Length: 243
Ligand SMILES: Cc1cc2nc3c(=O)[nH]c(=O)nc-3n(C[C@H](O)[C@H](O)[C@H](O)COP(=O)(O)OP(=O)(O)OC[C@H]3O[C@@H](n4cnc5c(N)ncnc54)[C@H](O)[C@@H]3O)c2cc1C
Image (cartoon, rainbow, N blue to C red; front, top):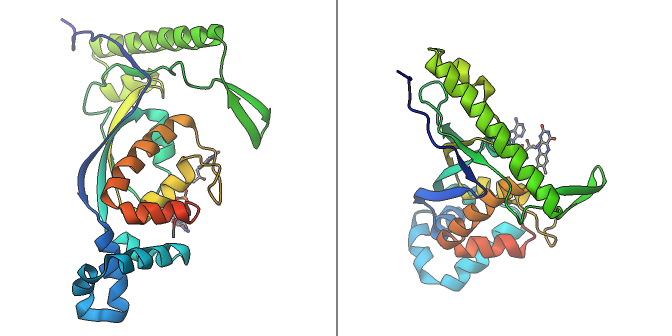
């Protein structure tokens, strides 16, 4: 009798990001900043003059007074390939919890680049671009990744069936496998992350992130922009630099 029934292998080309919990608004920035001059009256001041609030957020962003942007919290659920998590977890101002390959059988969900994913790198190291692949190259990538994933997952199941511990059997699984995590941050951390993990030609310091982590970043940014529209607007207006 197998340890676990074989599961259908699933291939995906997208990522999932959900906002599961938040305490984040433009007002959080305002009261934190206004305490400097209004002290105990800082909360009352928020409601007085929305235009002044917008002006204050712009000023804080422009002059890089960052700490008022730390009085917020957002928790995101992310389901993405492991290679994205490796890049993501370099961001030390986030808190993370990820599913365990020791305590659960890992589900066979694997990343296959979609048809819109640029496949070919051209130019010198440090100054290169990615361009579309040919239909033949896309076919090769799809077939090669799927075949490798199936083989790796089969080996994983064979080991589990033979009584090998999950923490040992997972050795064969590739970084294109999906994992899930919660990632919690404040608005300042998120802006720093977005400045590095999204590509915008009009950013003051353009970055060149891998497309897959950028897909996660774009979804996070859209969710955040709804919570803190003035802060998001000021972030864009001042070159997408974290204050
Ligand atoms: C396009 C791109 C390519 C990359 N390529 C590579 C690569 O080839 N190899 C590689 O190893 N990494 C690579 N990285 C990761 C990169 O080096 C950073 O680890 C990652 O971007 C996190 O940035 P950070 O340290 O500024 O952010 P966070 O860890 O989120 O820190 C935020 C800020 O807090 C401060 N801070 C945090 N911890 C410390 C500390 N210990 N000391 C002082 N200040 C601190 C710094 O001001 C920092 O900018 C790459 C990143 C990008 C965006």
